Picture: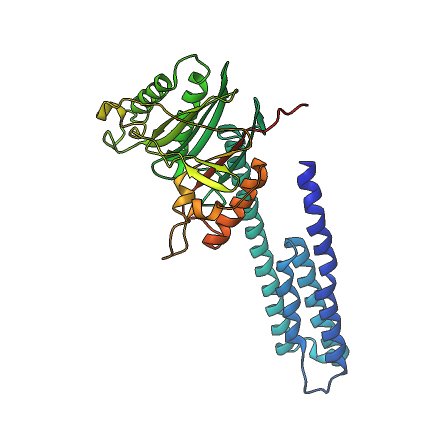
Length: 372
């Protein structure tokens, strides 16, 4: 809250300083109108003062400027011709100016209420994101880790993409997934799988047993009583990794998910599964057997996990984002710097807006043991 208050002080000061503009406009119109020839009337220009005030001020500021404009209109009449103050024409100008001011005040009240509602919605969304999908810690055992989540809708902050990590006695267990669909249903399904993974990943079961358990959880829980979807219409693609603390090979099970990429000295290599499993939620229908693949992950290399929101991002009518081609030659060793560059490059490629949520995780195994 203190940070938010400090962030609002700058705009508040700017608003107070901008009040000088409509006040100066009112003074200028009054002076010029009084000094102008009798057949020249500039009073109607006073409406510009309250009209521009909502761009930087609230209802009280707009009301004050509107009242000042009405008084200025009356002052013009008194100074130019006291008898004309109560003429039908002058009264009509004063009434019209007052009505415009009232309408602007009502507009500001409605606008500010909607802005407050949107701020509350965003606060709830941010709290939900921190609760359901908090950023991964920068250090997990000997690994350096960075994560990014890009929501297709900025107001939503969170969608159906997910990731999680858990420590075991011998290494780190990671998951990246993507729920079919969008909206609150996708968020609910993502939270369900995350909860099941966090509850089971610490067990000493093998990776295949863990994935089989998660598949059963998805099959049981995604199809709630009264659900209109048929079995097989709801599923989650995911990739699961066991990364040992030593220099042993990484174990992987891919459930219909894009393959991880290992970068070594700027050269990316896709770690495709030799026999990928079906997405979670379809295992019981297909009687899937989860085969563990292995690949090396040496010190000094960078491991990238992502969802299809990255590889399927594109401009309207343009080609998909060529991930391996774009990252070729990137030599960043720090996961956070690498993802910062990847995020900037991705958004620049699509013109600043994604059509689907995207999640990214970069993992680095330091070449030398880190202390501290």
